[in-house]
Image (cartoon, rainbow, N blue to C red; front, side):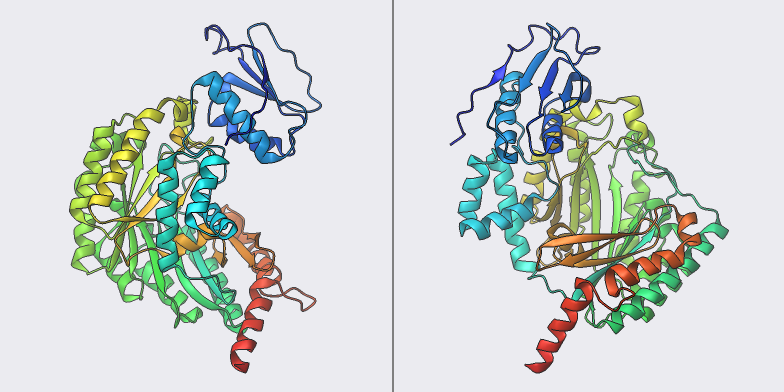
Length: 502
C-alpha cells in the first residue's frame, strides 16, 4: 500500500508556454538524506530545462508561474522521500515511469537481495510492486533474468577473478558516443600494445603468485579488431602465456564494427582459444548507419556473420540499439528480425543512452525525453520476438540518460549466457582491468562492496605512467608495500588453505 503523504505544492501550471525559458518545477530537497538520488528520480519525469532542484544554501525564489514541490516535514529516509516525490511528479506530469522509484543501474541484483530478505521470488515481486512502484512487466523481466542467473552463474568465490583487457581504438566515433575516438596511427598502436603486454605479464604473474583463478577473460574497447590479425594473434598468445587459463570458463573478444572484421582475424581469435565474439550492427538500416557515423553497410554486417560461420565461431553476440535517431519501431523490428534470421547465440538490446559529451546531445539536448513512446514499442516488440525465437533474458542493466528511462537487456539461447556480463552486474567478483581506461574492482565479500583501482583513460598517458598503473594494482589488488593484502588476495589464500586441509 502506497504511504498516504500529504503533498505541499502549488497547483500544476495552467500552461507550458514558458517552459523553454523558465523552469516551471522547483523542487525543494533540503531535508533529504541524499538529494542526489532525488535528482536522478526527477530526471525520469522531466527534461533538465523544465525543473530546478533547490538545495540547502542556495538562494531561490518561486515565481507565480512556477510549481513548487517541497518535501513535507518528517520525511527524511531516502526511499520515503523517493516514494513521496514519485507520487507528486506523477500527479503533476501524468507520467508513471515503469521502473518506479529505482534509479540504480543493477535492478536484478536488488531483486536477488529482496528474494533473500523476503524468502521467495514472489515476496521480492510484491515488495517491488508495493514499495518501489515497479510496473508488472518490469518485475516479470527481473524475475526471469534472476532465475536464468541462478541456473547459470553460481555463487561468488573470492578465489575466482575476471580479466578485462582494453583496446581503446575505433575506426570512427559514433554520433551517440561520449568517448573521444582514438584512431591511433600504426606506430602509436604498436607502442600501446607493448605497454599493455607489460601490464598483462605483470598481472598474470601476480595472479599466479596469489593463487587466484581466472574464470573469464574479456577483451573489449574500443574495437579490438581495429588491430591487425598479426597484432591480435600476438596479444592473445601473450595473454594465454601470462595467465593460467586452465580453469577459464570463457574467453570473449569484442569484434564490434563489421568493417574491422576479416576471416583472418576471426581465425586468429579462434586459434588463441577464445570462443566468443561480438558483431554489433546496432541497426540494419543504411540511412541510420550513415547518420550515426558507422562507415559500413548492412551487407558488410551479413558478411561478418558469414565469416564467423566459416571459421565455426562457437558463440556470437549481436548488439542492436533501440531509439536511434530517425528510426521508427518498424525499423527496429526489421533489424531484429534480420538478426533472428542470422541466429547468433546472444542478442543484446540496448536502449540508446545519449551521453552529455556526445555529438547527438549537442544537436538535441532533450532527445532522451522525446523518444520514450517509440522506444517502449520497440522494446515490447523485441521482447516478444526474442521469446518466441527461444532467447531468454540473462543480464540487465540501466544507465543514466537512457531514452525513455528504460534498460539494456542481454538475451541468450539456453546454455550460451556470457558469464562475464552476469558477474559484472552482480558485483560479486574481483575484476582485473588492464589497459587504458580499465577500472579494476576488488570484491570484499565480508562487506559486500567493491573498491575501484583505476587506470588512466588516455592511452598516451597510460604508456607514460605504466609503472604507476602496475603499482596501483600491486597495492590495491595483490598486496601493499607493508605486506598486507586486500580481499582479492587474502580471501583467496584463506579459501585455498581451507580446501587443502579438507
